[in-house]
Length: 420
Ligand SMILES: [Zn+2]
Image (cartoon, rainbow, N blue to C red; front, top):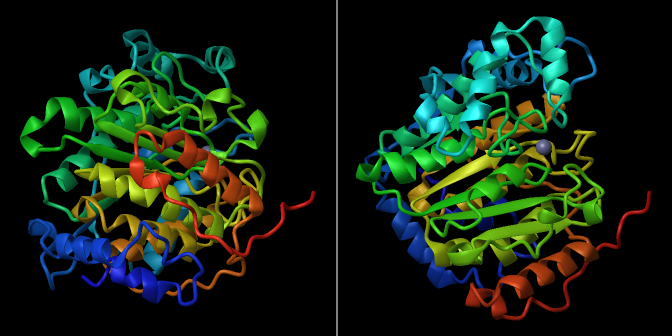
């Protein structure tokens, strides 16, 4: 196995933030014991069983012109890289499944499910006309099938991981999902795949014993759809780290800010870490993990983690203009493996540079398979703004998560805000 919190220290020699107050030795040891005691799929000494779902039928959703960035090539590039690195043969291969409409309708309006089902029967001018009614969406003949398969695929892998048949899994799906709202598609997303799977585990499969789900959304954009679907639901802790730029970054809504923390019994269960500008990289994300996500995850103690795994914050992605390296993603994922007995389901969201997403997914897959890596990031200091944002988030949430009341480390060396 070998992938546990102990690797965090090996992976990042000299890393500035590894000994923060919340991430104490005691909790490290406890999580290591939990990982060792995990279910059938991750027995001590046995190789982890990592599900890998790829299906060419999800290439059928394709833009007509070259303007759109959410292309089938994204999936192909990932698959080529995983095959070339020998990762595909080490994983448990899985095929996509069509989601039942009743599962999709658990988070989406009937009207919306009907719209997506009927897309494929429209002619091309009708497709364009329909897409124009929404924000940043395109449709093609294959959109209906792809959307139902993407939703069904995340259900499929989540069920297998929850049941202990797999240690963890990666669902290479498209169209992505986290912007899709209850009643409308949005931002390249047709159905909210991760939300549908979360709802399935909580409401359709009580036999699997999943009562608390942590959704981590590291896509560079705010997961607005997912936030709204679980805003009053304390069974789902939603954590999104994203560029916000004071509302000047897509989707341009104020609800991506840190003051949106959930409602009613769900107060405290919605966490936004809103970056103020571009260029955030490994050190910024690790700081958000160490000083917000991990302490809260420890207190929440999820039964499974669903990862809205967009890779548009990756180095080389011009849409996100951030700088996470492949091994930076590997480190962020490694840190999550200490929770929920390592049960992690990664579902692809955004990411628009095929080379960047291929390298990033590959690094993540190797982490799940138990490979070691070293972090060799050129930017080991977070921005001043990162520290400020983290403090704001902690202040907003400390009533609900007392662990966030402690003081942040002092004398931390920080980088100044980038100039443009
Ligand atoms: Zn995105």
